[in-house]
Image 1 (cartoon, rainbow, N blue to C red):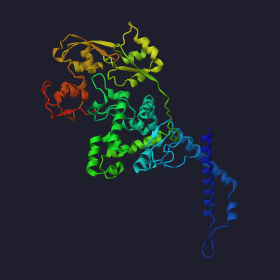
Image 2 (image 1 turned 90 degrees about the vertical axis):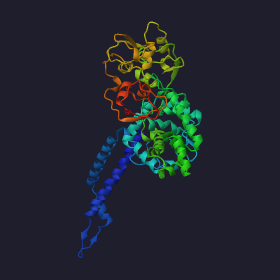
Image 3 (image 1 turned 60 degrees about the horizontal axis):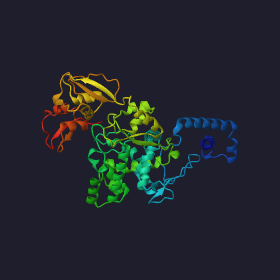
Image 4 (image 1 turned 30 degrees about the vertical axis):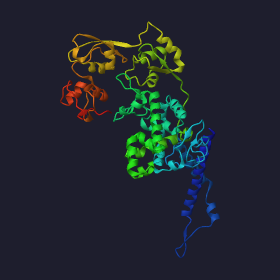
Length: 503
């Protein structure tokens, strides 16, 4: 409240001064009298002051007060947001969170900390004064920018403590904690047009060094533990190779090979010079300034009006002796379904795999309730549907209709295949989805409805219609038909296929 009153007094004093100046200007404009020689002369100062009446000053003060009230109401929760770039060493306005320390301390160019052992290496005056960095600071600190960052960091709340711990363990720059803001807006299920997935936006062709798996049932690019460790390892490897954090970040965006080739071709090892000369692609030119600007604002939440604070969120990863639907488990244990899905977003169908190495992440506050539910033999923790095969049904169309995977259908129906489906046969289909009609629309591949095949895919060695259709979320039969082929035809390496564009 004290800070708010100081702000009001400050603005009020400005408006009172403005009122006096306006009154003086008005009187000055009327204080010129024509002389005999048609020259103008000013009236004496004491006469001028005498003409400033209490009534005139009162009127101006009322106007100033009204303007102040409108200003404060229009600012609302974004009172601290700025509509212009903030100078690096600019002092805070009186009363606006001046107890928040600056991340660059005494202006060291090498490293500095914000307390708690958190090291910031990119928030230096030299990098913050870069024109593109200033541009993004301006965007992030206006009202819409602050609203965007508040919504992003609300999603980050359960992931950020773990990310910060991992960064501190590796002694990496704390700015890296804010990279998911740029990559995915902290949407754990985010998927780009190019197929990158998760908080850290891993591509399929880049996950093998980091023990990240992708199957029909599980996509560990959406596992915040494995993806965070993989991303930080990748960034650390980039830094060790390139010797510079700006270049390491550029390599995370554009690829280590692409950045290394650019350096070899130009002989330049300075990210900012390469950007200025347009040697890097446009997205990469903006990538590092965006991160620096976001880190600058989010590392000082009170200064800029960021309302999200990160309490230590406690969770545990437990082994399972049987498969479960996380929705049913959440309901029985009294846990929010949304929270369970966000903690275990790698489960594509909401059902845990048979893999005994899998660990389910649950809130530490509900560990006893979860163990009690898992120990009940009378409780079914997976929802099953019994589907009668009709003419035109395929395993793919059934998996799409029931919101499950081919792998789960095959697991619960040993020996089943499209070739040997019999009309009238009953198939067990595990699913997390509730209230599904027991019959899928026969003869219509569910994955192809409404899809347009206006993208392209170059076939790699060993790929099939089945593997490619899984990548693009379509039906293999529909994929084959869109390319004028039969589903049993062999795909040759290097062939270009029409595929749906991933949104």
